[in-house]
Image 1 (cartoon, rainbow, N blue to C red):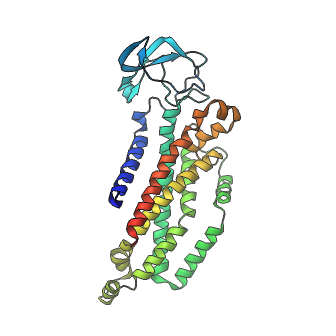
Image 2: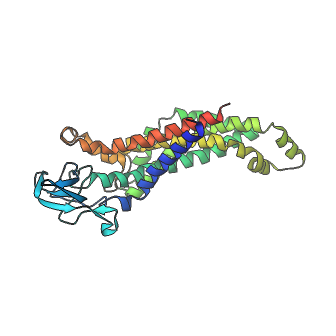
Length: 320
């Protein structure tokens, strides 16, 4: 398989996953907060085509008893385009492709909606880190001197600080109860603000080499300003590094959001994220008796693998 083909497959796979999560409001059969209190911890619903020996072209599900078992006397066909969603069943039927949680909320729907929070955190935090890394790395590499010393020594100091304690300290200054959106922006800002050091150091190395190139010296000799040289000649040489770093930082920050929300430091209920959904599986009985509660962790694996393959492919294309 050529690198170009591998790159296309990785991009297509990631686009498919991101598209499914972005369309959660259409693909999910239920809203993330919709509760079915009569079916707590219902097992994953089985979709059938055969009933009493007869084949049905339209798939259907059976009703659920109070104990979560299939009630063969009640059959509900799976309908497309029901209530503005891709699929669903008519009430009082229910379809839980990945089971339900303790409040009777559909885990499949919450995984799709929760992916929005986890992925958006990774994307936004990576964008912030790269923006700061490009700014500080370009300034340190181009002007050098005390600017370089100040920024790089500050970067080393920031690398020595444990960002988990920084998050705990920032959280301690805030009110006890903050909204889920405030938690999201706080999480994104802190993760992104402490992650700019590695991109900045790589950008600095590229800029140090670029500022000595002949076409840059020629433009400077014709009277081009520093800002013009940076914008037109130097920064375009750093896009490859920034793109490769983005493919590395996004999965790392997705994992950071999952870990922090799992610990109760990120986005909280009722807004789902993969981290706070996994927190429900900390209880022994939920982990042993209801293994489908681990679905958010499994959902993160293909996203992470897709970005790692993309990062390896881009790094291989850039290497001689």
